[in-house]
Length: 323
View 1: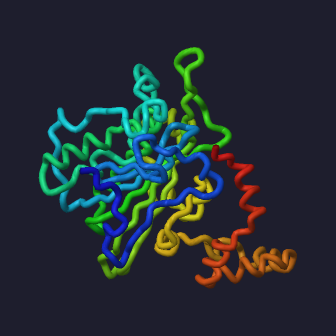
View 2: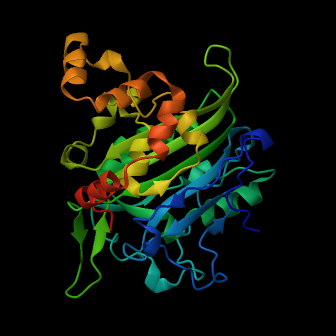
């Protein structure tokens, strides 16, 4: 049975809903032909995802991870890639763009993140289920096996909690590259970057009790592709971002708890601007006074995020170009 992502996995007091497509991407969501009309979320064992019609790749993949119930899957089992018939072969990227190329089938939800359960047979089925082509995006082998591995290892070796919600997805921009093998092939759109959000319930006094969120963006740019050993220089703290930033890049609307539990808020605080320069800005631009209030007030931060001017939102859409 494919249970899919469970919103109450972290406990009934910490329900985390799946991301919802915003106005910019709603029309691009695939209605899987193998699911009832109106059901857009595709469930797998311990994770779920939704698909983009235009890129034929997932907009995001969301998993529940229980590190205390991890099972070891035999090396020759649980790694069978398959085309998901519920989605339809024409609505997903098959194997041929990857064969004999520098591009890997990059798992969004990592295989070893879902290989947990009460017994090894269940974990093996979960491992196989993670190898759906719908759960893969084109990642250059140097990026997949090096830079991206850094954040994947963070999840597998997490020490702050046993139970995690892990959401992952690609970032597409107007500057994306395309890959095609043969004349008139469907051009496969290569993500410019990938994001990951890890949410858990803090269990230590040092870190603080309650819900905690870490958000990351890794760009699949030329430096990351050219350098096969870049992970050695990566400091994960430097890769952390606000939940707002991922929302703006992707057009997805996240559960409000993922904003409030992320220590990196919408505003970064007045200390990032020298006092003299800050005061000069406030005198020159009266409209910044509202922003300044948001720096120090959580309520103002929430209101600013929820009342983001529509014209500004459309300007961001035109600059980023998600679809």
